[in-house]
Amino acid sequence: EHKVTTEAEIQGTANEITFNFHYLLGALQAMGAEKVKIQMIDAGSPCHLSPAGKEGYLHIIMPIKQ
Image (cartoon, rainbow, N blue to C red):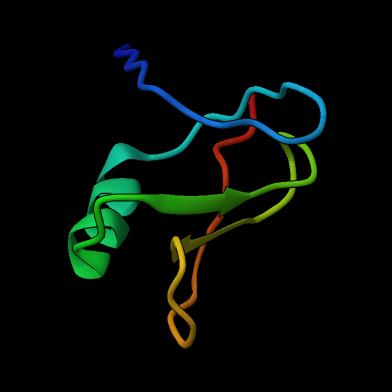
């Protein structure tokens, strides 16, 4: 088990989600952006990642069910 924390601007209610880190790191490396927008509904739904302020890139990651 490994946990990482980072700075974030959060809109809406706080939520927790678990990802396979290989998929998350792959998406972040492919984007190459300093800031990333992560949109989620709940811990069981797919998560949408995109570079902040840029249109045209979309990455979907499925969470790990707990």
